[in-house]
Length: 419
Image (cartoon, rainbow, N blue to C red; front, side):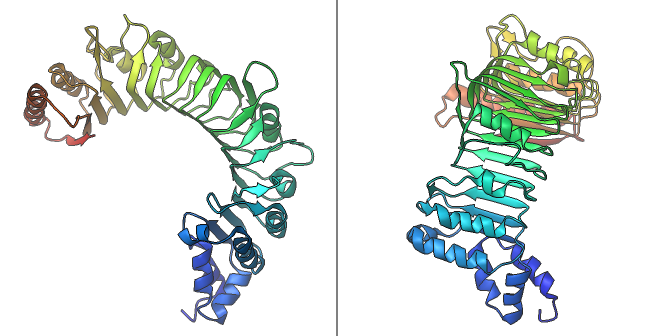
């Protein structure tokens, strides 16, 4: 160890998860202390990593953090996540940011202060590439002054911000590629809760726990879109056909429009969602490059419409991974067995049920016949704690039928996952 270059030691210390561990390790010898002072590039303070943080008064904690930060030079990554450590003095937090801002590339910031710290004013016009802000307020965004010329990733979690400031913030980030919005409190000036965002460079967006009347996203480079636990009346994506990954999970939306961006879709993952199949099908039917299709716990509002395997096989000839959750409602089977076209390229099949019955085994068997090049099948099931004798018999009958069935497909790997 004594022959390691001091720069390598600095890199080792930078990979430790918590600042407390870094300080303890740096006490090993004079050489390690030098590595800590001159070659440490990442430092993290997290109240969840060390429970004793919560037992220390905010004033003493401020002193400890200040001493630790001010002994370093050239920090590139700084994480200060103090959820349960009390309220900090704004002037102290400003001093931390001012001391490190010229070299910082990554900042993860969740520090309750009084008054609120304007992090954009302090860190703007610097070399920051990744910024994650939580449980703070962002107001009065000025794109010309608070500009982030190098920022590629922005995460806002439980942040209070107006729709206008959010739009201006994206304008202030000319190289932004990834945006994450988690449960933001968006202030709207008029009666309609509308957010319009535009970024020519944005490639990935994740939105969680947001409730709006209208959400319009315009970007020419979008590749990944994930909506989770949202309530939207209108969601519209305006782009140039670059979208490759689309996931929607537990979302309520009346009007969904991504039609102009789907030509190059490779993954569609829809779960816990109510849709009108004909409208949804019209949106994704042009996605001839689709590699993975997942429709799980999906309710169709058409009532007289269902999805048949023939439609899936014809529209998505390059499909390799298919995930379907079995449901029989009013005598109509979702994902029916009409037609004769095979899913030639499907190698992974995920099938599941919410309520098991005698038809499920037959459905699985027919799907296996349609996938001549299948390599793996995963069967998901929901089993309640209290089961009647009849339910136990159905489950036992299903297990026996699957065992018999898979003897015909010895080359296929079988996996069961129950919850």
